[in-house]
Structures are given as structure tokens and as C-alpha cells.
Image (cartoon, rainbow, N blue to C red; front, top):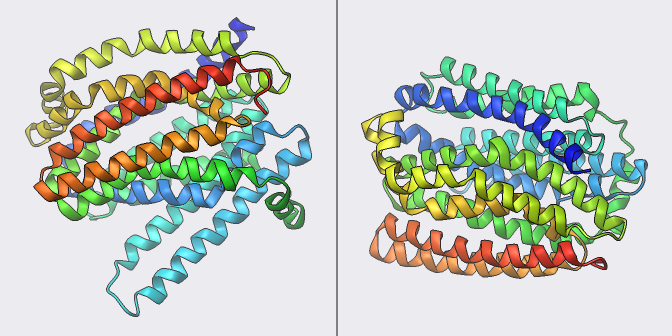
Length: 402
């Protein structure tokens, strides 16, 4: 079973790795075509989309993997798509009404609305392909999305929202591809909406926990845009983009396969301890070299790769290197906390993280120092990852997690 497990990871890793390699190769060109201010807007957009995507799914994508019936799989996937359309329309209509009273950037609102809808739709398709074991199609969709994003970004350089246009184009291409390759399902609105009554734990427990997690990671970007210079916010955004690449290259592939295998074992009342520890050990070894490079040479790496005006992003990387390392190792394993009663413990962990981050943001606002925010976020996340690993280990060992 272990060989099959790592073969699945290898398939996803090959496609995901190529996709993120395309992003990585393209970034030095984009940082010379787009200013830190452009990246600040892109980071703000990405943060808003990440938050709204959660609302647009209500976390029912997890039911695609956990459902024991094929009809449940289909209806949960369609429910995500239905909700995403309503959320997108609501954001547009609400913003239009709000613009009658206060000045709003309606063009940016439209980007965010469409971006969240596309992202939610893609998530539903992706989880369907995961359930079907179609890892090659999952990998191909990521490669296609990366190619479209980079090529579109090179075309839209004269637009202040060029990176946003490129992001929409990349996600939409993946949505179309995954829909053709198995993500499309005939929609029965009534049966899909019935899941809102029968499967309430996703939006009562899992959604609040995930929302706290995403808010904790994205609110600092939104907060920074309103309180610090766009130059520094853009550097912070580039750091987030770059540091997420190793996790996106390997961590996401590991998480997708680990989630399917762990849920399968726990649903069969078996222990997932062995696969949990083995996966953690492999990630620990793989993340060591990137951690060392970021910790000691972050500033020079960013300056060499992206230009002199991005040195501050490297300084951020050096401070947050330990957060990156622990997140790289532990984040792929945290999906096991969605199993049974451990959802509530994960919510408590996320609530603690959100509370500490609010304190960090308040202190950095008082002293008008973005580096205080960076240091506070690092400490908060290190504590969170430690708790998540311990609780995740208990979940993996517990055969009666429901």
C-alpha cells in the first residue's frame, strides 16, 4: 500500500511541480514588469478571494471524499457550484448597493467576485477527480492554469490589474479542463440543497474552523494594505507567493493523497498512525534545505532573483523561515482533523491563532511597524503548528474518531 501511496503522490507532484516551476520561472520576469504596488493589489485580491471561496463552498468539498455513496459525491460537488454562483452574485449586488452610499472600487469588486466563484467551482472539480483517483488530470489542470496565468500576465502588463486578469484566466482554464475530464455532473438542485439539512457539521464546525485559518493568513495582507506603504505590502505579498511555492509544488500533492488515504483508513475503523508519521518524516527531510537557505540567505536570494527593490521580501523570509518549515511539514497532515470529533479541537486551535494574530496586528498598528507584525505572526503560527501536529497524531491513532 505504501508504494501505491507514494506513486499517487509522484503523479500529482510531477504535474504540480511543473506548474509551480512555470510560476517560479515566470516570477523574475513579472517582478521586473510589475512594481511592488501592482503586487500589493494582487495580494489584496488573492486574500479576499481566499476568504470568499470558503464561504462559496461551505467546506462541502470534503464531503466529496467522505461520502460513502456516489450520489452523495455528485450532490455535494454540485452544491458547491450552486452556492458559489449565489455568493458571487450576492457580492456584486451588495457592493452595488453599498456604492450608492460610499465610494467603492467596483472594478476590483467584480474581479474578487468572479475569482471566488471560479476558485470554488475548480475546487469542486478537483475533489471529484481526487475521489475518482484521476491524479494525472489533476496535475494537468495545474500545469494548464500556470501556463495561462504567466502568459496572460505578460500580455496585460499595461493594466494596473494585469495580474488579476491573469489570475482569472488561469483559474478559468483549469475549470474548463477539469469539467471536461470528469468534473462535470448533472445538477439536481433539490437533492444538492438537501445536504444543507443532512450534513450540517461542514458549515457549523468545519467552516468556522477553516474560516479562522484563512482569515488568520489573509487578514494581515488586507490589514497591511490599509496601514503600511504599498511598497512594503507588495514585498510581503511576493514573499507569500514565493514561500507558498514549495508547499504548492509538493505539499498540496501530499495533502491530496494523504487526505484520501487517511479518510479511507479511518472510515474502515483502522489506524492511520503509520502513514501519518511516515509522511511527516518525509516532509521534514524535504523541507530542511529550503529552510536553511531562507534562514541564512533569504535577503540575497530575493534580491538576486527578483531585483534590488525586493530585498525587503527576503528579510521577511528570513524571519518567517521557521514558520515556512513547520507549515511545509505539518499543513499537509492537518486535513485529518476534519475527521469526527477532532473538528472541534481544530476550531479551538484556529480560534487561538486568530486571537493572537489580532493582538499582533494591534501592536504593529500602534507602533506603525510591519516587522513587529511579521515577528508576531511567526510566533503565533509556530505554536499553532505544534498543537495541530499533536492533535493530528491523536486523530490518526484513534480508531473511534467519530
